[in-house]
Length: 367
Image 1 (cartoon, rainbow, N blue to C red):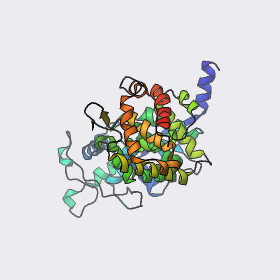
Image 2: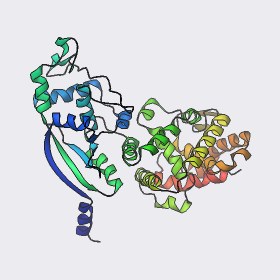
Image 3: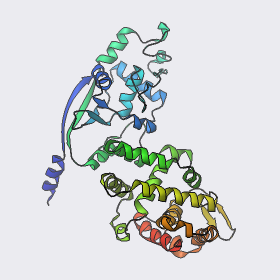
């Protein structure tokens, strides 16, 4: 296939049409359930109050704002691909934004901005009339135009992921896993809820002990996915990895569409693995072990997680045969093995590390 053939094929995957709509029309689409901004996205909806206020300031001043990108579903409803934060801000301002339970989110109270300091304390509807935006200001907002680009054909779910990546150019950038979560929600909300429940398993939380920033960026959920994807993967597939982030996304989409993926079995393996690790290693499992000082230190290390957690997880169906003391000694022992040390440093690429450390973990922790 030559370059032009590749261009033609890629173009055929995405057809778009673009025009402008008033904010009032956007609000009506949402209240009529013809627009889905996925309330699940609000778990990683990170605009601050001042960012929201600056966006409303831009509308009031007539400053152009980026267009909204949506995917048109088979039922005609628009799924928002890019613009969740902008639309959520508008809907929260007019007190129409709902959470996952269908309950209205508290209305937005604006803050002062550089050009409109008197925005401070203003809202859409308040019992105190002095706090309200004026009727003319409200009408100006409702009549302001926001461009929309509608993706009319979208046969490959991964194209949505690519769009998220390429369109996420302003505001608070989402992490790779936050993007991935958006795609999961769009394709199978029930899988996202199941994954989120696994992620809240207390022994797992105890074991990984992430920083607040890593947790905020949903890195714990990426670790859950890594465990599910790599736990029983055939070793020859490790060599197919080029970009680990893309590989995880591709494998996640395959799991979602697979009829053979056994959630009950995988959940049992996940919980038994981390319950065992939490009980045996007392929160030290994925930290560096200093063999000379005979103590753990530092923060969470992905290489230790891949070797220990996924290594033990591979044998989850035989976990009752494992001895805590032996596993603890093996977890310390890896820090004296050249095979581990040579493939776990900061200069080692992930697509080189994984094909070496995962088989190592499977061998070391075999009961």
